[in-house]
Image (cartoon, rainbow, N blue to C red; front, side, top):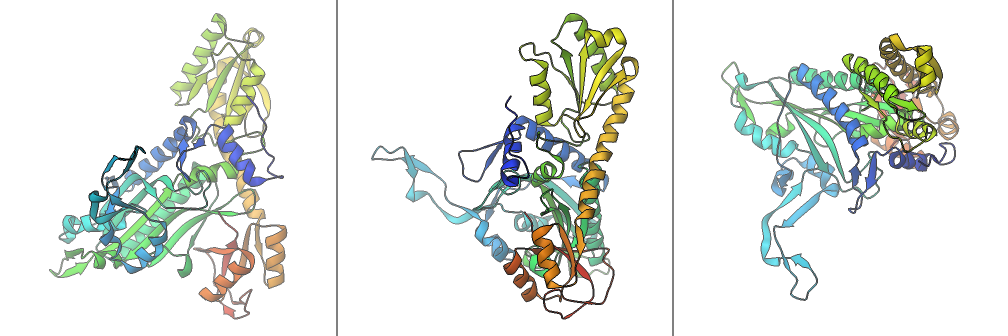
Length: 488
């Protein structure tokens, strides 16, 4: 297996694409802007999905499924929402093909035009709220806490696997509540779920914050987010949770009879994360030798490689080790391939990010030990065979924590406080990362900074203290710092 990967220092963008391809995560597809997620990549998504699904259900949510197609008229009912998504919508206009009478294969049948065009869902607020109108009658029906796992289509012109594709996989939660306070509480609860998942499972430190009005989700009253920092100093929006107020309830006439026997519009939230998290995982942890995965999400956590090749005696010992590891809930694979040399296998497992590799030879058995190699630091050492399961269990947690600590140290080193425009520009060009600076609160200044530097306000940190200052661009008064960065 060829190991050549473009070094991060030479071309970070190509390095990322090399990792996606050579770590067997995804392929390009015949459809421009779409990708084929390969088994190793989908296995990673399944681990993410299963853990998030567990966390949602632990907080009272249930899953449902809503149609892929949305009547065009639905998107016209909430003005800000349609404006936000209009340029990204794929539209179905006909429902039938026919043979080309000129022999050119198939053509669209002009007589099969839909009476109303259908939108391939870019997000499901509109069709879900049309449904909720029938589900919600009184306060006894609330709160309604629904999530769905689905695919969506946003017609992106500039795409990159996992980070930005025309079609992607995600979850989208949509909840209805009897009061604004309850809906805001839900929005923040999900923000905490996302942050916990990112840090404890992805080993990716994040900053919880509020989006500016300019960056807010189309149709929301407030958008909360988690922002992560990649190894090239660019930020990644890793998840969002939106307080929708009563906007969609009013657009789709979703009312309930409250405890005072009065009709009232419900209060809403929506929230989602997507396969973009896989891109974030790659760029947070991986190196010039391939993918690096946090053990809690790795589809395979441990691989056992018989050296120099499988034999009956090695297989017996390997099976015993694998059984002991599986008894602890550890996902393990025994490499029984007798065609390739150990060196080739080592390079392959390093490339696809297996957290721990165990090398087992006849001499190891005789000595009562086994070689242990960890992917995060590339360190190798020997461990006792009779206690290897306990050793590996502890090592996996150590690797998980090390990856988080390493990423957090990098992130913390790349949060820079600046007070002048010259400092802002210099830091952005020479160091990158998050820039903590005062902002005058206007969209005009926000857009001017973006035009001049390509940096955007990633968020207003939820724990940002009040602090008198002057806007880094205009010098006008400011009450708190915000985080700027270039981003994906």
